[in-house]
Length: 246
Image 1 (cartoon, rainbow, N blue to C red):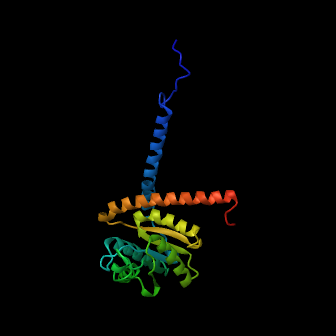
Image 2: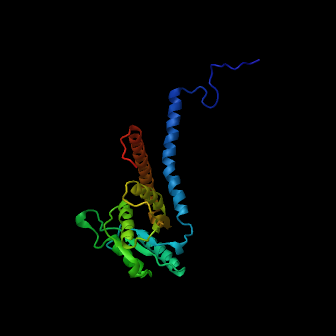
Image 3: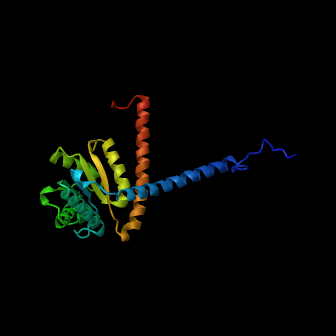
């Protein structure tokens, strides 16, 4: 009768050294780190195209992007059309939401900026698509996506304190990062935790998909890592008794 040697390892790791096992574990973690942003972006992209109950919206915030000689690009045109459709649906159902376009004067350098702000160009396009100027607000200070949220939402509150239910319109592949940035803005008290935010995705033009995906993968991974480090630091302060009282 054959007897199993109890000293020998069994299973798929049989005969492998601890260093080899560590290498396999590290490789597995690396694959998960690389794949997670892709899954995150894919899930949020699909989710952002769901049907939105526009009748209950108090406001629609449209995030800006780079202009082309002061004119909206195909990427921004897609966002403008998605927002205009949402506003038209809301008005058809009896609603009358505010519309905020967000984005400052951007360019390669401060001395080489666009002739108008992203908010102005986007606002003009929305008016051409049927949005009423009386319900349009321009947020012209933001230079980053984080600024878009930190400036646009307080602008709504100062204009109409009753605003609660807000749709944020951006490109579909951008939604995953915008959701993370909103959570960060709330945790940093740049945005009040009082809004019911719905994220709405506009189709990314085909010519922009590849560059957008590569950019968002890196930024989403970086944002999640930054969030994890910040959370760990705050938790360590709580454990040590040095955190500010909540």
